[in-house]
Length: 296
Ligand code: URA
Ligand code: SF4
Image (tube, rainbow, N blue to C red; front, side, top):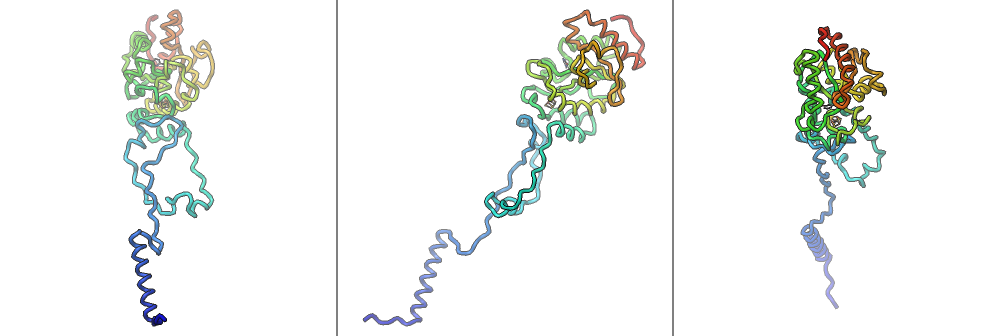
């Protein structure tokens, strides 16, 4: 008959068995007490929501990510956590591209800041196909500001508005017609990026890009804006009309005088319309107090 173990020995055996189990669990990395889980690491960069193409050089992405307050485990828990069962907070409404551009423009105190902000703009799909943005020829205030439609092939390459054949004619209008140097007037476009194959600007592209243009006009502070062509005139005057009906008059936009005339590229194709353009230029010159010059 096996000898009965005394209770003391039984207790010691039990303690040893428990210790062995504890050692095995320890070796396997198992813990009987809960250890707080490390929160997953914070996302590296927050994506800025725009409907535009992936940014190549958006400030928010090219700058180092701003330091953010450490996330509490609550904020960074995976979806299955109890936090997920709470009612979700409404996501902040994504800014429309036009609102985004307006906010970025509003943060620009001067023309050089605006030029730099435009160079980073990816608010519409034209950012994908441009070589570079085309902001203006010169960054100074001016009495007369010419506003064209959009950069073409040459402008996209050089980053300066009106440098191709249409630009040569515009230079001649300014220098021979008005008796001014090209650098005495401002030259800009409604769109800052070239539409592929020089297609017409789309209404949505104009609507977004005009947020840059409006501040650009304010900062260049011209007395007279000369809209070149149906697109620029229709856009600046909020009219869908023919140039024949828009030209030859003085309009007002945001307290500035606006005169519309034919686009130089159109005049290259239809030179007989140059006399109408010359009348419009003389109208603008009169508003500027410039002496009329001989027929061009
Ligand atoms: N046409 C435009 O409207 N703008 C330019 O800069 C060049 C051609
Ligand atoms: Fe931005 Fe204007 Fe260029 Fe579009 S066309 S990407 S709105 S600068």
